Length: 91
Image 1 (cartoon, rainbow, N blue to C red):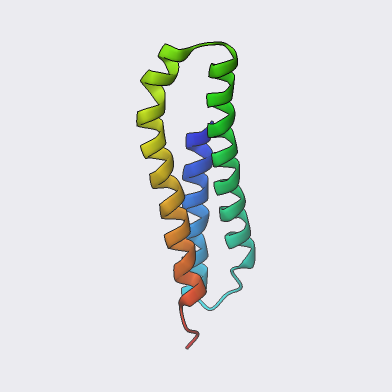
Image 2: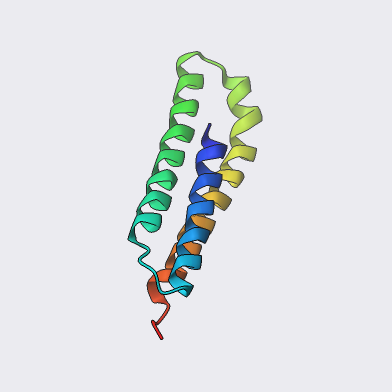
Protein backbone atom coordinates (compact mmCIF):
# COMPACT_ATOMS: atom_id res chain seq x y z
CA UNK A 1 0.00 0.00 0.00
CA UNK A 2 2.81 2.40 0.85
CA UNK A 3 4.24 2.04 -2.66
CA UNK A 4 0.98 3.19 -4.26
CA UNK A 5 0.73 6.12 -1.86
CA UNK A 6 4.32 7.12 -2.60
CA UNK A 7 3.87 6.88 -6.35
CA UNK A 8 0.61 8.83 -6.03
CA UNK A 9 2.49 11.55 -4.17
CA UNK A 10 5.00 11.78 -7.01
CA UNK A 11 2.25 11.87 -9.67
CA UNK A 12 0.47 14.72 -7.89
CA UNK A 13 3.78 16.53 -7.48
CA UNK A 14 4.34 16.30 -11.24
CA UNK A 15 0.78 17.57 -11.82
CA UNK A 16 1.63 20.40 -9.43
CA UNK A 17 4.64 21.44 -11.52
CA UNK A 18 2.72 21.04 -14.78
CA UNK A 19 -0.07 23.27 -13.50
CA UNK A 20 2.42 25.83 -12.28
CA UNK A 21 4.01 26.06 -15.73
CA UNK A 22 0.53 26.79 -17.15
CA UNK A 23 0.06 29.53 -14.50
CA UNK A 24 -2.78 27.70 -12.81
CA UNK A 25 -3.41 27.41 -9.09
CA UNK A 26 -1.41 24.54 -7.62
CA UNK A 27 -2.37 24.54 -3.95
CA UNK A 28 -4.58 21.47 -4.19
CA UNK A 29 -2.06 19.36 -6.07
CA UNK A 30 0.63 20.35 -3.58
CA UNK A 31 -1.69 19.57 -0.66
CA UNK A 32 -2.62 16.14 -2.04
CA UNK A 33 1.00 15.31 -2.84
CA UNK A 34 2.27 16.23 0.61
CA UNK A 35 -0.67 14.45 2.23
CA UNK A 36 0.07 11.27 0.29
CA UNK A 37 3.72 11.59 1.29
CA UNK A 38 2.67 11.73 4.93
CA UNK A 39 0.35 8.74 4.52
CA UNK A 40 3.20 6.84 2.85
CA UNK A 41 5.43 7.41 5.86
CA UNK A 42 2.65 6.39 8.23
CA UNK A 43 1.87 3.22 6.29
CA UNK A 44 5.54 2.24 6.19
CA UNK A 45 5.85 2.77 9.94
CA UNK A 46 2.62 0.83 10.56
CA UNK A 47 3.90 -2.12 8.53
CA UNK A 48 7.10 -2.21 10.58
CA UNK A 49 5.17 -1.93 13.84
CA UNK A 50 2.89 -4.83 12.87
CA UNK A 51 5.92 -7.00 12.13
CA UNK A 52 7.42 -6.18 15.52
CA UNK A 53 4.15 -6.99 17.32
CA UNK A 54 3.95 -10.30 15.44
CA UNK A 55 7.63 -10.90 16.27
CA UNK A 56 8.43 -11.34 12.58
CA UNK A 57 12.04 -10.28 12.94
CA UNK A 58 13.21 -12.22 9.90
CA UNK A 59 10.58 -10.39 7.85
CA UNK A 60 11.86 -7.09 9.21
CA UNK A 61 15.44 -7.98 8.31
CA UNK A 62 14.38 -9.02 4.80
CA UNK A 63 12.14 -6.09 3.95
CA UNK A 64 13.20 -3.00 5.91
CA UNK A 65 16.56 -2.30 4.23
CA UNK A 66 15.09 -2.47 0.72
CA UNK A 67 11.82 -0.74 1.57
CA UNK A 68 13.55 2.09 3.40
CA UNK A 69 15.48 3.02 0.23
CA UNK A 70 12.32 2.91 -1.87
CA UNK A 71 10.52 5.03 0.72
CA UNK A 72 13.41 7.49 0.78
CA UNK A 73 13.21 7.81 -3.01
CA UNK A 74 9.43 8.47 -2.93
CA UNK A 75 9.67 11.08 -0.18
CA UNK A 76 12.68 12.93 -1.61
CA UNK A 77 11.14 12.94 -5.10
CA UNK A 78 7.88 14.32 -3.74
CA UNK A 79 9.65 17.07 -1.80
CA UNK A 80 11.94 18.08 -4.66
CA UNK A 81 9.22 18.12 -7.29
CA UNK A 82 6.87 20.12 -5.05
CA UNK A 83 9.62 22.60 -4.26
CA UNK A 84 9.95 23.43 -7.97
CA UNK A 85 6.47 24.94 -7.99
CA UNK A 86 7.14 26.89 -4.81
CA UNK A 87 10.25 28.59 -6.13
CA UNK A 88 9.24 29.01 -9.77
CA UNK A 89 8.65 32.65 -10.64
CA UNK A 90 5.43 33.60 -12.38
CA UNK A 91 6.02 35.19 -15.77
